[in-house]
Image (tube, rainbow, N blue to C red):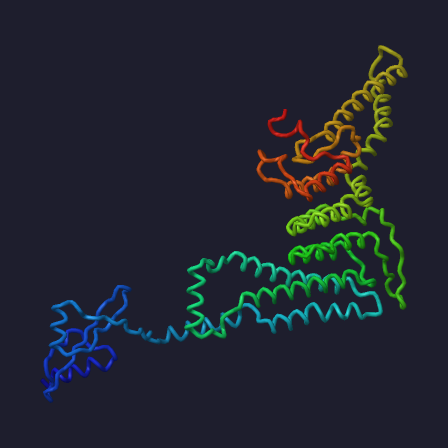
Length: 442
């Protein structure tokens, strides 16, 4: 009995009684209790109610034992402590808190922006570019957080889930460390508004000269933040904003010429701005972006110098080059006079070059494979078709975004926005959903 009593005490030292202890009485004659480790339905260890052995035998016979789940106490080891330390370090090096993010934003963006606005001289272009690069970095961070929050579906709001959540709120205390999604969303919106307004104040400051790099950064910032309302105004300032003269106090300004090729909005930037406007479902904003970018006179002048200046120069110089070639080739024949041979060779070569170039120009200006829903109206000059092709392409993107995506449903759109879009396209010499070009209408 003493030996069994000692083994019984050892079994209880670890907090878990040894399984299979079936002694009746101890050395003092008291009735002993029996405990055994059980496995419940969830796979965890369970402890049988501490009952006298005799009752236990009857219970085992009648299968009326009640099983209670035992609270598991994880064993802490050195590896567990190291893992917890690593997790704490990862948490400290994770996302910034609201205070840290506000301090970092004030250090990298707001303080520099205030310095630029309060300056009495023309600020350095490198400093302004640093401000917009910092704004772009913060805007990218905000956009990533918004995207990650939208990808997380969260709990389903079914009637049963709502009732269960009410019961949980009644029975359990609210955890102070639980993140509030509404507060996080309002914080992100506040940061987005602050970044957008700061970038707008800097770019519209009279002392800041808008370079192509600054314009590109500003468009990316507003696109990432989803606030493209100010883009048409900035596009207009890019071509017409007075240029400050450096190293002068007080600052003097010169009036720019808005028709120079360097004042045009690049097509890539216009596409990015239009994509942001389409995402906001703002049709008038799409119209303004198209008007201030590819419809501006500076863009057409730039396109002529970039794509048509070389062909027109070659066409202007071609007669002189052909005459020189004909005069040289006329000396290699003896069937006719040299002057007559020069004239014949010149006429034939000019006819070949002229006809071939004309067919090529007509093929380029009348190509419609790239057109989807917006085409040119009948009678539109070929020069206008070529010069305004980018305008038609962007309008085609807007029509595709506002209409049905299924090709078999095209032509069924209706509504105020759609009618306004159709009228606006018609006023520009274009046709929306031309009947003879639709599927099945050939």
